[in-house]
Amino acid sequence: MNWSGLESLVSGVNKYSTAFGRIWLSMVFVFRVMVFVVAAQRVWGDESKDFVCNTRQPGCTNICYDHIFPISHIRLWALQLIFVTCPSLMVMAHVKYREGKDRKYVELHHGSHLYANPGKKRGGLWWTYLLSLIFKAGFDIAFLYILFRIYHGYDLPRLSKCSLEPCPNTVDCFISRPTEKKIFMLFMVISSALCIFMCFCEMIYLVGKRFSKLLRVRHENQRVIFADQHELTELAPPRSQYRRTDPTLSASNLNLNKEKVREGTTTTTL
Image (cartoon, rainbow, N blue to C red; front, side, top):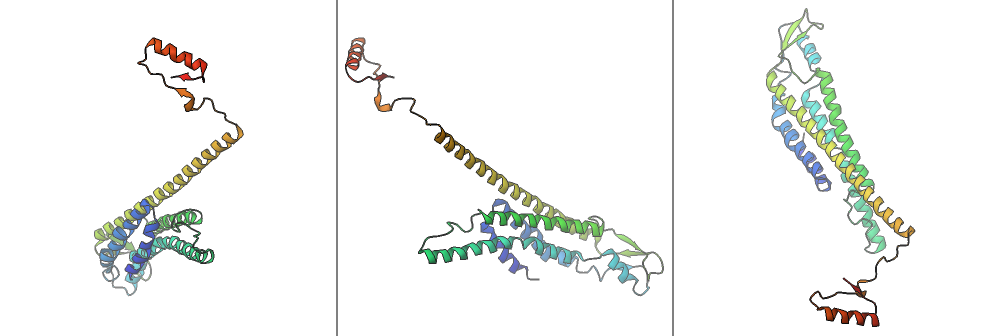
């Protein structure tokens, strides 16, 4: 599968993401896609060929392998990566829709723009971005649950017993390199859990920022309403009516100034 095309496509969302979104995207392509392409496919490539059961009964080994491995880990992880990265394309599609709408608006209104910044997360784009985070976290949680239910945990036993037909009795079956495969499986599970954590952090950040902005706007509106309802008068005269007294003047000069004040305009001494 050509993962570079998917990487270049999803990386375009990076400029519309928050700091948490950029960290999530880096974790997906560094710790999941690269590990999957470079190492995991080679480790799990021999799972069917090197699966051995201590019987020569025709068909017994195939039946036991299908029972122990209902779905290949590689194919399950490939589906998981596709489903997890696709919601990011919702954001890119919404931004492209805004840009096309803004272009048409500019042509009709002779240079006036409909959106100052089409990639800014406001209005419908904010909801699209939040919905993409919910889908990404939901897909990761769903695939972790599927992996846990199918294999009864995140462990690969060295020995598996099988008594399905056409096996003549209970046979012992062995998989190749169980410890190495278990390490890679735990690595992919932990990487998925970290990506889920980053999605929840980004959702909390977006919602918290939105609520703080709403509270700030509401507070400003209340201040404006309060000012309109109460006709506030000036509680003190303008600063131009004040006259600063020089503290270095002598007593005779102070008395002379006070007599001038009484004769002329009233001043206030600071």
